[in-house]
Image (tube, rainbow, N blue to C red; front, side, top):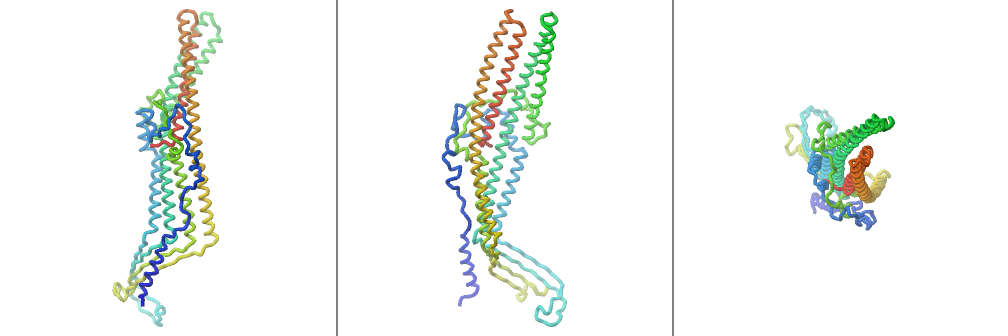
Length: 469
């Protein structure tokens, strides 16, 4: 006759053999998702300003600006948003370890000593039992058989959410890199604009001085002097705006580098010319873009997590089965540890709450959550393509506009040179010469603003391309 313990062991092994039956859908991307469409994998719009070469990880090195390089590296280590993202990542990793820990054997031990009088009737004795010293000690071990994947699906969901958090860290890195470059470019542009504004002011002051001398000589009226003085005041009013904008950009840099405003990077303050790309901008293709964009990876991993949550909800419809082993000693304090006070047990426990509408509703809610995550994933893919194509268009058109304004500035230089020669030859008056100089400065400022738009368009494009550290 088979021993009872052997029959129990055989039954437990048969139950354990079913542990591979994980319920719920296995995650995979459907063919009809937006990322699998041929149009999403197609090349991006190209121009003479771009190439199909892959975007380098540290795209700011394309500017070959040591100051910008140093600022980006400092932001990498000190930015507060990145520190927050790093802490969130560490927390996410702990949650994954916690989910995996659900599959570990559960161990518990306890011991107590007490002076008590036990109930005689509980021992079928109709008499009073004397007060005595009792000792209780023992331990229990249990292990959940993950027959239907309750634990495996939870681990799967936790891992996917952790990978989404990793991609979120990269999203912060991409944003910080772009914001550092924007702030630095703003400092350079505003310093250059301030120099041009000072040049405009100097020209207006010379015009006003000329108007005063002509009025004193009786060759012009007081109205011309008043108009000239008004133009001086108007020109001077632009200086505080550029100074404040440059200072704000420096303070923005300090914040991005994790510093107080007074600790803004002094090396950036000396920049008075926009950094320039020395070769066409590498952008890759649509497939590379979608593989690189961290927000696309976030959405895809959240879709995987939502799919796993369906399995979690479905697995909870089935029983929870655990193996248990316990033992210990209970009796008179003097007998604790002896054979007659010892006890042990080995068995299996089934816990099953019969499914109700509430449990089935959880499954339906998980399916709806996965549908929502799929829609969000498709939307993220399409938004990434839209943002990149839009950024490429703005970059191209802003560059065309800047080229035109550069040519306009060259024409203004020619006209200013001609008027200077006419004035020196006595064939034109000083006001005409100064006016042409003023037009030249205005053309220079228009050109500067246009190239600033080009530089900002480049940063927007780098951000859309998902360039990071």
